[in-house]
Every structure is written in structure tokens, then in C-alpha cells.
Amino acid sequence: MPGSRRPEYSDLPRTLLDSLGEGVTIANAEGRIVFSNEAADRILGMGATDRPPEEWATHYGVFLPDGTTPFPVDAYPLVRALRGEDTDDVEMFVRNPSVPNGVRIAVTGRPRRDGQGVITGATVVFRDVTALRHAQAQLVESNEALRRADRLKDDLTAFVIHDLNGPLSGILALTELLLLDDSVSEEIYEHLVDIRGQGQSLQAIVRNLLDLRMAEDGVLRPETEVLKVGPLIAEIHDTVRPRALLAAKTVEVEGLGPDFRVRADSDLLWRTLHNLLDNSIRYAPKGTAIRLHVGPGKNGTVRFRICDEGPGVPEDMRERVFEKYARVERDDDGRVRESRGLGLRFCRVATEAQGGRIWVEDGAPGGVCFCIELPGGE
Image (cartoon, rainbow, N blue to C red):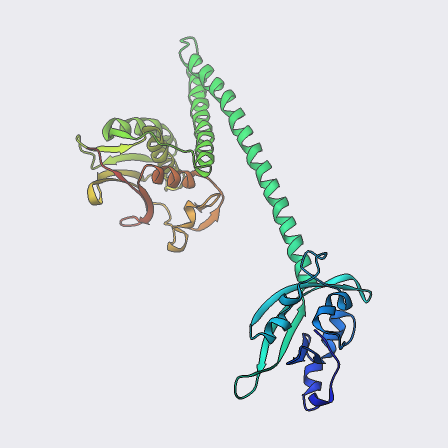
């Protein structure tokens, strides 16, 4: 704590110490303050005192960080330093008539020793951290407000997703009924097929959002079983082929053997492969083929590779494309840019939930391949 400038310290570089922004206080071996610089007097609002440490609490108004409890004498950094202890950034609150609103200081103390190691006094250095603590408190308050807003957003998203699923199911059911009506004209029938396809795509997005939310909450529980790969791939191929043909592209299945089995959740795997094929149909050049290759992977796994001849994905984006709300847009000119989406994020979450992994690699001779490995069936 600050004290009077005593003649015995007349050799100190006072000009240097007074130029510091931090407060500097020096005490002798008896605990009497013998020096304080200008910053110390300014921060504490008053000059030096010859009073012993037992009276500092009332003289300077020294409290614990709560601002009301008197600071224990034995815990003063200067007193501890006189006992031979080093202290760092001990926070204290000072309030007196000169600083009625109070000031928070962080105090560091060190013992002073002679050549034989005997303690001859102590030095403390302290700085005003009032503004810093105020900013930290504001940051904590702002973070809490953001967390509350984030919780509200998550709740709203959950309600919207849940409420969308009902009307969509109704639309798809009515569409199926109309498709069974023989009196529907061919033109109307084609429109209904398109409505059904678009509705199924939207329903898939809703289900993906639900699964992502469940994964974030730690409640996504895949129901894995040993599946025959052939029927599942055939169903997916029949689903995506019409859209591919409308886009002047084809989907080819390669390498699929009749005995291939995989341990997976059929719904999650179906939607993952559908998402990846849909992505390739969107970006592959017209007149090209999207290839779905199924074969053995490493260590008894089954590997799925969905490849197209569109623009590749740069290496520095190959992890980011699986992040939440991130995706890579590939245009007809071969340019690649980041945009926003959840499709690939769902693919990673669903694949890893089934004990597998997903990654991106270059196609051959060009383009891009999205690869999945899942445990093989028994």
C-alpha cells in the first residue's frame, strides 16, 4: 500500500517509478510503508500513511472483491510478502471519500532480501482493473443474453420442424390418392409426380433437421441391423433416376455384388445416400453420369462412393463442407464457393452415429467423390 517517500530511499529512481502507470509501494521489514509512486496515490485516491497494516482497512477502505467485507490483514499481499510469500494478481476493492465509487485493483507482491537472503522489506505493484472487470461483467451479461436467445431460437426451430411434418404428410398422402385416380389426365399426372417429388424432398429436409437436433441433444439412437445392400440401392436408384433424367444426367450403380451386407440404420443410410446423389445431380454437368460404387472397404467395412464429373472440392474446404450450415456451391463454370446448408452436415452426423466415417476425395479422372464406410454385415 502507498506510503511516504522516506529519505532512506532517496537513491531510488523516483522519476522512473512515477512515470509508471502501475502503482508501486515499498515497505520496510517492520511493515511500515517507506515509498509509493504517483500512480499508487492516484489509484487509491490518497497519499501515504504511517499507519500499520491493521489500520489500512479503515484508512484506505480496503475490501474483498465483494466490496463489503474488510480485507483480512494477514492476506494483504504486502504482509504476505513480508512473510516471504510471492503473490500474483490478488484482487482487492478500495473505496474511500476520494474514490467513493470504488476501484478494483490487482496486486502482486514480492519480498525484498539482502545478500544473505534475509527479508528486509517488501514491494507490491498494483494496477486498476475496474474498467476490465466492468467489461468482463458486460461480456458475461451479453453472453447470457445470447444463450437465452439461442435457446429461444432452438425451441422455435423445434416447434417449426414439428409443425411442418404434419401438413407435409397430409400433402403427400393426398397426392398419392390423386395419382391412383385413373381419371387424371397425363399432364396433371406428371404435375402430381413432380409435386410428390418436391414434397418428399422437403420432408427429407425436415427429417434431417429433426435428426440433427436429436444428435445435438445426444438422443439420436440409430437402429442398426444387418441389411442387404442390393435392395436398398435399387430403391434409391429408382427414386433419383427420374430427376437425373430431367436434368439430362444418368445415375449408374457399379461394383455391387449380390452378397454385400452392411450393418446400418436403413432409414439413415437411405437418406444419406439420397442426399449425396441429389447433391451430385445438382452439380454434375449435363450429359454426364453420376456413379454410385459399392464395394469392400478397410477392415471388413462396406464403402459407398458417389462420384460426379462436376467441379471438385478444394482440399481446404473438404472438412468445412460437413460443418453445420456450410456447404460448397459448384457452378457450371467450374468455380467453387462456400454457401449455407445442412445436407452434408446431416450426412456426417448420420454416418458417424452408425459407427462409420465420411470424407471427400478427388474423382478419377476428374470431379469429386463423396465416400462413406460403414461396418460390414455378419
